Amino acid sequence: MSGMDKSVGGAFGEREATRFAPSPTGEVHLGNARTALFNFLLARRSGGRFLLRIEDTDAERSREEHTTAVLEDLRWLGMEWDAGPDREDERGPYRQSQRSPLYARYFEVLEQQGAVYPCFCSPLELEVSRKAQLAAGRPPRYAGTCRNLSPEQRERRRSQGVAPTMRFRVPTGRRIEFLDFVHGAQSFLSDDIGDFVIRRADGSAAFFFSNAVDDACMGVTQVLRGEDHLTNTPRQLLILEALGLKTPSYGHISLIVGPDGAPLSKRHGATSVREYRERGYLPEAMANHLFRLGHSTAEHAFLTLDEMARAFDPAHLGRAPARFDEQQLNVWQKEAAHRLSADEARRWLSSVIPSELDERSVSAFIAAVLPNVVLPADAGPWIDIVFGGPLALQPAEEQLARNAGVEYFAAAANAAAQSGNDLAAIASAVKTATGKKGAELYMPLRVALTGRAHGPELAPLLKAMPPGKARERLARFA
Image 1 (cartoon, one colour):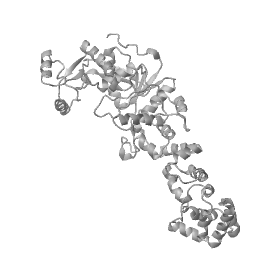
Image 2: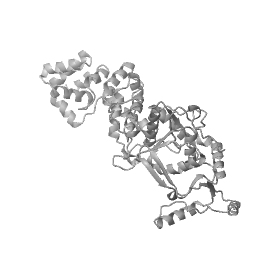
Image 3: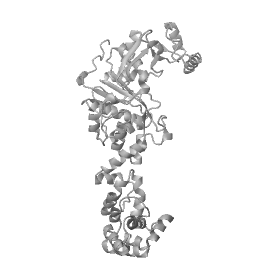
């Protein structure tokens, strides 16, 4: 076992590789999505490999529907992985729940070295110890209760039916140092860490162990993850050192916070990729916003994923918390909507467009409203305005229309009947009849035709209206 898997390059040589390794215990939130995007871009900028690994060793909380959602959300964002749970290769399987035999072999290596020991402490005993250390003003860490149990003491505990965890024996008096490619030089004292669990009582591998071993065995060269994992790194370096496995480079990105600076949560609104997708946000908009959260760039234009990969620079990853701002996301969303082709726009707005509308009406409606909508829901009210019955005007709009006068609307209604909803012809007729121009000419037309003082350009809206509707609405005030 001593030479086991030390050469992690394998068939892939020294090619750079990153990974996204979610636990399928809930929805993919925006922080997960940004981590995945940054790892994807980090790999693609150098022609490297992007791996997807499902960390589902926690059988009690892991759900298959969450794994399915991870795959759907990443694909929606445009990220394809080179290997993963649905794209296996010689380094797989890419579900940790299927890698137990590998973990068992490495557990055996550590046992043979005396680098681990069984721990029989109950959760209650550990909690009491933790509270006692905090009360004494000391940082909580495992007190080493089971570290030096004799073989007889261990056997007695087992005979009592206590299933032990396995703890890694952290060496004393060591300083663990590494260069974080976001936060710079890092240094930890081993005496501050405490022996930690690498195998649960049910025999499954704990995060510290499986995460580190899989990175090495899958040939991951760069681990880019949230800064909440920064203090996990020295533990994982100790594991890899004990096993003689190659260590990746580590970088830890800042967390995402809301506009108020507090950790992003439900009180800030939607936090999952699914929620934004269901609201009608476009993946290109989401990717452009995430690309700039905690990553500075001179590229201020709307970018494709390929363009992001060329512009991505890990040296420009910030250490300060990144603020998620839905208003800024909406700027990118509007840009993405404007870039949609006619067919893409039709699919995007399909949830609000009645199925009974004919092809011409749908095309004309989309052309009219697309420049003004951010989300599909924004187009919903305009369906009723363009294709619905009589409009219910607010008092101020009603008065504005009435003030234009009967002569104004008689000329407008007559021109609409003759021109077939041609705004230029209608406006020209009104101007000739009344001498009005500017806002006095166009605002009463807009209010009478749409019930609103603001909205999409009026000429395209008129083209989308059914024949006779413009004349009918104008004649109401004649």
